[in-house]
Each structure stands twice: as C-alpha cells, then as structure tokens.
Length: 330
Image (cartoon, rainbow, N blue to C red; front, side, top):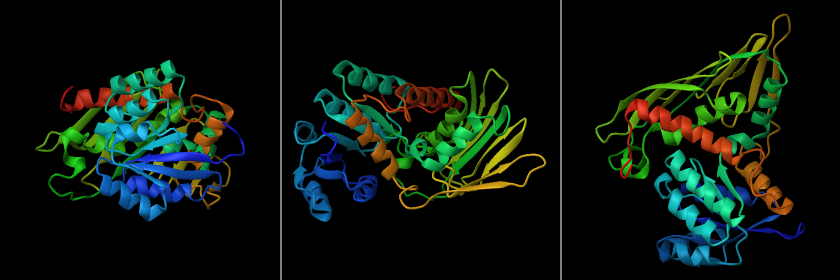
C-alpha cells in the first residue's frame, strides 16, 4: 500500500475493547477507522455514530467484503476469534486479532494457515510485546544484563466477583483465568526464554468448569524456571521479575504495560528504566506496528511472530490439559 495514505481500519465488534482500541487509533495521524461491524445493525450504527465512522455493517460477511478496509481489528470474545478472523482472512483482509488468537493452538494454527495460503497479514493483539519498555527489558535480558536467566515470575489476577453468566465464567466463551489473563504471564516468560520444554499446572475450577485461578511451572532445557499465576478471584500485584546469575529485574506492577522497571546488579546502584509516557502504555504502539508491516509489505510482525503466538497457545493448551479445563466442542 502507498506509504503516504492513511491506513483504513475496520473494527469487528462494538464492545469495550473495540471502543478502547478505536480511541487509541485516534492518537495516530496516519490511521483512519472507516467501518465497524456487529451482528446487530443497531449496535453497529450506535458505535459508528459515537466515533464518527462512515460505514456500519450489520453482518460480519458484509463487513469482510468491504474493499475499502485495509486491516481489520477483531475484538470479539475469544470463542469467536477463529470464525471472525477466518472470515476476514478468507476475504483477503489483513487482520489484527485480539489475544488470544484463538481458543487453542489448533484453532490458531488454522488461522495462520489461512493467512499464509492467502498471502495476507495476520497478527495477534499481544500489545505487551509491542510496548517500548517491555521491548527494552527483553533487549537487556538478551544482552546478558542479568547473566543467565534462572527464574521468571509473573502474575495477573482480578478480584471479581463476576456476576453469573459473565464471559469469564462461561466455558462456551472461553472463560476462566488462563485464556483471559494467564496468556500475559506466559507470553512475558516466552518473550524472554522461548517455548518451554515442560509445563506443569494446577487449577481451581468453578462450578461451570472454568479455572478461577491457575498456577504454572514452566521449565526450559537450560535449567530456567517460570513461576506463573493467574486468577479471577484474587487481586494480585500484577508484578513480574527476571532473576539470573548476574542480577535481577523487578517490574513492580502492570508488567504487561509497565511505567518502570528496576535492574539490580551486585555492586551497583539499582537502575530505574521508565516509560516515555504518551502513547507507550496504550494500544497505539501495536497499531503502529501493524501499519508499519502493511506499508513494508510484511505478512507478519517481527515483534509478534506467528510461531511465537502459537508457542504461547501450546503452553496454555498444556496447562489447561493438566488443570482439567475443557471448552465445548473440544
């Protein structure tokens, strides 16, 4: 596509995530939201009026066929990602799909295959991997700032309580802590160490059969461990750390969009690295990366590679299997 023309976005869904992402697109001068889709024409129209979007589609198929859209942001519930993203890829639309890319590595692999067969751009919306401060942390670790990594810890919990029927409690919509929150600790650990060789997990299940909280132990061949936790019943610190043979890094809170982290090394004063602010902690860096890829003719992002996305879901699949979490139709 032409480098000077605005990238024309379409938004599939009209929920809270779609609204937040659309707000952040407004921060980017070279982005333009031109279409929105919902199963309900009225819902699509309300969203379009709210954000000044010219076209409102009352069906996903009609939306996917909109040739005036360069790239689609899929913000449906997890359980609909395979169908929604697949429909757009089959129509030749580039896709940024909210995390997790699908309910399982199998489903996600089907989307990757569709994208590659059609020579179409696809990226999972793992915004953490595009966050400038997280990228800085990963670069420090890769450069040996803490020596050889031995332990990665991360947690992400919300206290609830969530009302009956909420999507986080609904197996049919991919509910539970793992897919909604646990993917972040897993993705953080795998950004630094890659896919683990072994996964152990324990979970407490709700009456509906979703995990209300899950603990994971990941092991890598070099001897590193990942100690990860997610919950929809506990308000955790949402912190992370990376400990190695030559020091450790502390991310004191909101590790998936941190405002700072601290590097500790023996015999030195702690070094504090801070976010530059502005759009750094929004979805804007992720959207900017998508648009850079489209202008460069790239079919996947080097910041969020498709194989890395599949690797995270393989780990989550293994954790779910150990914990006894199953979704309808599996």
